[in-house]
Image 1 (tube, helix red, strand yellow):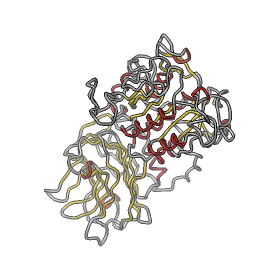
Image 2 (cartoon, one colour; image 1 turned 135 degrees about the vertical axis):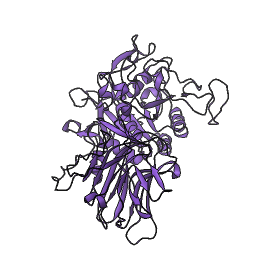
Image 3 (cartoon, helix red, strand yellow; image 1 turned 90 degrees about the vertical axis):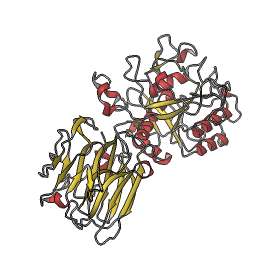
Image 4 (cartoon, helix red, strand yellow; image 1 turned 90 degrees about the horizontal axis):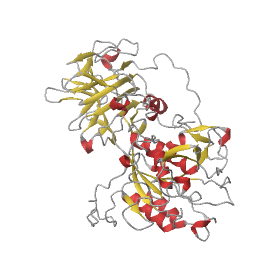
Length: 545
């Protein structure tokens, strides 16, 4: 079963390249610890990481990291700055599964086109390495801003290391994985054995909590015949008949004169798990490693065929809970949004069915939507407003215990307050949901509760780019106000109920007086208001593009 991400599923659509809202706004740096890579391959070269602190070929360690001219990574096998694989080929095949360039009219598409390869060669021409090379590569990745490690290496007897299959071996390797602070994804191997004691294999048998171990599934959606398994193995992912990139010279298993070939093994299951991790980091670069690991392991479809893994499932980008949560209760009257602005026609038409249409001031222009369908509205000195004594004239109503505001946003630049929605005006403080210019663009809910003489500020994570994000704020019955970015809870604080300042509800603007008037500068899409505090699962559901 395919687990390739949604944007890749669209590759047959000829206008995909013009759908800017589906194009990545940043890349995730993945350290490839393997046999190196063909840096010039037509389907890989475009996704190479470039060390921003290094000047190529000048013979100087410009960034002071201890490595001279390390522009794309480092060769720990030959101790030089060129991590090209000259003789084996394994790294070129695993790189292609992860991040072969898509939409380039050649070859294949990787599972995550929004990655950059930090190439770290540790395996020599016979496919073996040393523990020290692994440790050095992990430390390099951590010290040079890699975000996740794809370690497609597997210690065997051929490495010539005493105790290679014994309990407690490689403590220094385990410490390096721990100390890196990065998610470390590695294969289970292809011996068809249990990795539970008394069998030990490394890195899978390392005890670091940063580690994910992946085994191979096949086209029948069962474990591959060579797949190793056990409770040490976290999950399965497709690992048979996987088409990928290949280099021209090297081991016959990993090379092909066409530059592409079909391969088998848990080595090729690993990049598909890394792709999901990269997608999550693309959506939210601030995810900690424990949270990232947990989120990756939620992307599993539970099946009895994979009971011999700790999650009991096979990777699926379309499954997001382990185990699946019980179905939600049927909606009750009033449970949907009380105002839903799709903004796909440049007007304030309400799609919620409650009739709470807003008025457009300086009607804005349309652009392709931030979600996968429809249009969106591009704001600049224009906004929507409503006040006519109906429900939303006082949203949230004075003393309201619960509410939710959610929207898709893309900010042009955070040079001033970026108001998503507010209820302010005529010198009357109320509340505002915004991206604040402080700390480079911080998601914030600002409120002046009933009886308060100063604002309550709930500050979330800094939005570090001009990419597309889903944002939400909720207030639940217990008074907790929570901020969400891209479906992930970022901050919460107990805040008193809002006061009624008698001012209009604005979308894309806040105005306290003629001086303190600010407008959203960018694109808003799919803006929703609820008269209840919706829960985290519902937030995650509406945060799917």
